[in-house]
Image 1 (spheres, rainbow, N blue to C red):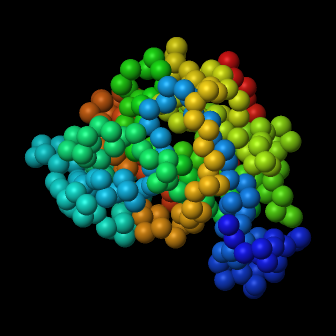
Image 2 (image 1 turned 60 degrees about the vertical axis):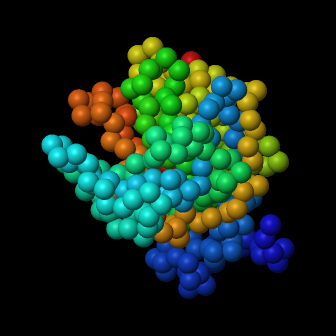
Length: 297
């Protein structure tokens, strides 16, 4: 836990008091204050009983991967071998990589290390948080080694690497007023703090089987894919993110880059499904600011 003498201010401190944020930011907190907030509102996750792929430490995933560049006719070019990929190299990969012809990607070596590494490791995971002063939000970034897609969709949503998130909106007194949950196809979900499920004053998320989308209630949730819904349920593992080390993701070596966290899927070549690893946290992949109070089917 954190020192008991760290207290959040009743009102936002003047910008000059915070070395951690720009003086132009409307809200400024010290690193100790943001870390305390991150622990105070860390989500509790409920996984589906049939979930097979759990949270993983991103650095462990990097260590289990090679770094490669796609080349259509000559085969992929290996830039760094297994266990040799520097996080700082990932941070320098620009935004153009998202749509480049020769995309650079982390290739998780499950073939060499065994499919079991796709299961992740809850005991090795981190409470990866990000405080955004512009929106006055705390976002929790959740990383999984593998996305198995929701049941019934086959392989067209399977891919290496999976970044999800939950955002807690704060008011001017740094009290929570809303929770936003990441889902796919622009279907992020929101709940007012009063309506959001909570335990011990912290938000609860029910994690969609395979896809790892986050939801405020169990049930079948539309994915906008005909005949396929995300399924969130109780009965599986309960995981308390507050019990993991709190790490400011913006200070990690890999933060800000646009490497693909997973190989480019063959189905992506013909526009079928989402079979390629996503990019990670960056200035354009921060808090969830577009969500609706939709309900399960």
